[in-house]
Length: 466
Image 1 (cartoon, rainbow, N blue to C red):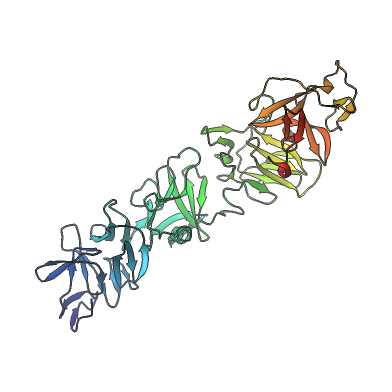
Image 2: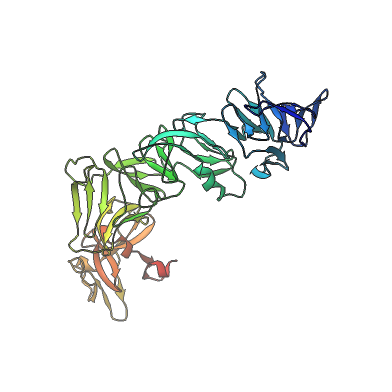
């Protein structure tokens, strides 16, 4: 509306008391709507300067927009807010779109909680704006504190990263807005740990394992982080929480892997919780404690990947267990071997530790049907030496020796060629040479396909992927 020629204000609050052009006492604001009660306008398509919006609670409370201090809540003013207008299925504050693609939106005021509410024909709460909202934390179990609306400030007090903070948190809004075409209405944290946007229109995060008893957000270093009641890091707006991404699939020398952090492999993971190491199968929803030593060990706080070892350490940074390699190398990492759905420590292209161990009982083992691998032109067959690491050579076939016999084993739908002399010997390709290698340490070098109709074998790697 146009400014009236003459106004009377409360000089303490700058509430408009009287205007030569009558002040509007609106009950709601709705697109393409205009209503009068006698000569007084009670519904219009914009809420603007000098207007009062009457509470839906049935009392005489109201919210108003002053020319000096903007939108006036009970305990807070927003000077930059001059008008709020639903138009063309969107909601605008000062001509800036806040919500898009919502039909029949209506703006009302609730004095009990001192907040503006936008609803439509489908949802009672499409969006809210509150004068002052205090939460101990943004937490899934509190309906008042599990939703973060755009263009709002929430005062949260929580001990985060060993510091007491009392800060305004709307970082999630800033991150989410860049991800979607539609403007963010609100972000909700569900009881199952899912983070959804705009009435489940989008999902920022979905719980990948089993639901914990509770979830909450913490803030630190300009980041918004989701944790569960088990102290597990579940999600982060800026991905990196410590020295690495929270869902990293490998840990290199110097990178963090401590309590609450995980090695994320898609449909499985490894995590340190409550002083123990766990392998979690996201498909079966089963968590299995990893016994990395036969001894009873102290509280595990972190795993350190080194240049010749991986160290299992307690909260005092003391080693409680180590696995060593006989050489020093910067090519050392703990990572997801998705071919076998296992966690592997590899150093210098040698696998020194794996969980779960790969054996003939792991995966879908075919019946042992032995084959010979022969060259018909030389009339000689592949012969495996008894010692692991030896070259495989051609020799004259002997029925009495198992060294000539091989069989295929299928693990997780991938085929490997094993020697009949030892159930833990694979035929592998290393530096373009055929040699024998220990099964549990050479899964990535042992992918060999057998073409039964044509009777030949082929080494499978990234360059000849079929």
